[in-house]
Image (cartoon, rainbow, N blue to C red; front, side, top):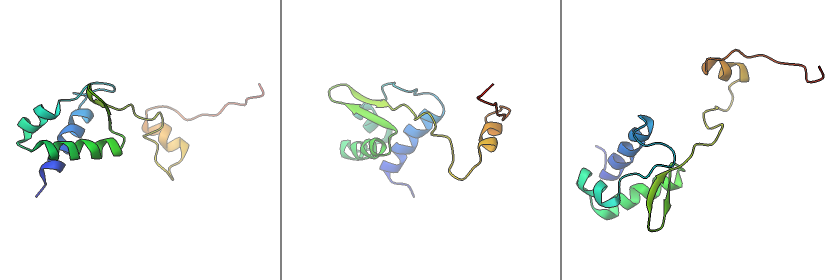
Amino acid sequence: MKTKKEEIKKAILNKIANRIYSEGQLIDSETNLCSQHGASRMTVRKALDELVMEGVIYKEKGRGSFVAKKPKYSEFRCGVGFSDEVLKRGMIPSTKDATL
């Protein structure tokens, strides 16, 4: 059984994955998250703090929590070749001679 903290984190991550929240967008306030999930403010803060540590969101004092930008190469996997990554993205791998 999932804890409330895990439930809150999963809900926020799902909203980001489903593009309900986009990069730089303000997410629901702590108060709203408390009422949506029937959780205490401390539980919501712990969930948000974990998401901050994971680099998913960032906080601005007095403003709220926002969705963080993904690093440019965040989807590249270690140990997978360039050609495989390019094909996965629907492109055609190729090389060009830089001296031409």
